[in-house]
Length: 374
Image 1: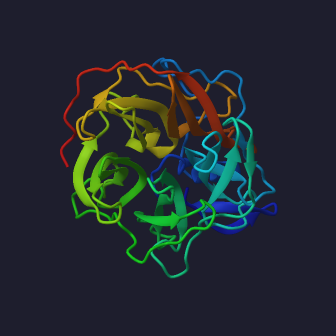
Image 2 (image 1 turned 90 degrees about the vertical axis):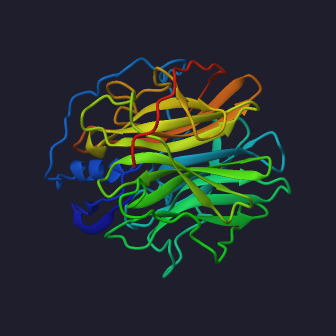
Image 3 (image 1 turned 180 degrees about the vertical axis):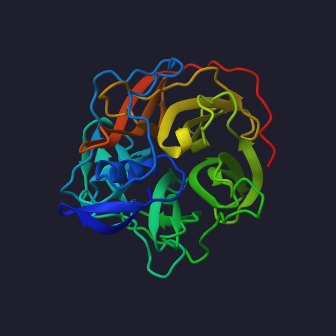
């Protein structure tokens, strides 16, 4: 999420500018719509359902983390959920959040704990926040937390320097207890690509898997043309990375001529193959979703499912404008998914939060297509 608070409307901060195409960057635009200062156009009708979502159903469930205008983490999004490394039975969620009343423009990363993945205890203190004068001065967001073999934790996240021109890059922090984090000096570790590359404008939204002796990082790249795609980098130690290149781009997922691309990769290893859950960024960046799924043997060549796995909700559902940023765990024969969502009437109402669903493991794929040219 990216925005600048520069004035007030009836005592409420107004968002006059937003940058950075990402899973919930549309939030700033939609809030500016609410307070009547956006000069563009946006369709106000109920979003079309698109293709049927396979296996995942929103139902009438409310988000497990809801928005709250009075709290410092009042607009939560971009979840990263892990099994509690201390107990092995509960869950820990790291998520990016803005202050609920928008009195502070910075995005910080917070931590919550749960015994069942549905009832969460939140903290009002961020575990990671921007460092003045550093590469992540503006925002710390889109966390991906992994547990290393020695039980220490590593968080990969997106950061930017200039609030007026948010060109994101990827860095990391380390922790022994998941609460106190240290940012090493060798940040950022994934930087923007050369002119003409798929990640020339921004590199962000990391998803990291340690398989054997190799770290794999999938991330979203934004080109100078403001199109999004997903790339891959590899590392022997999680600190020194080599980019492989573009591995997944917008193809069969397209639902509108103005769709921007694909974003928010979340990858898990199921013991036999990689599974990626990712989001369609549509309608010139004003909507996000559905969430799609693909599988790969090597992390580079992907077979996409024929249908999305989770679409936006209908009517007044809290995901009617955005469903994005999946975070998936495999437990036995089930997939557990936490995801971000948002709904607004475009006038005076905003409903945002993080949801939770589970379903049996299945995989229905079609033949892979090569990625689009860089």
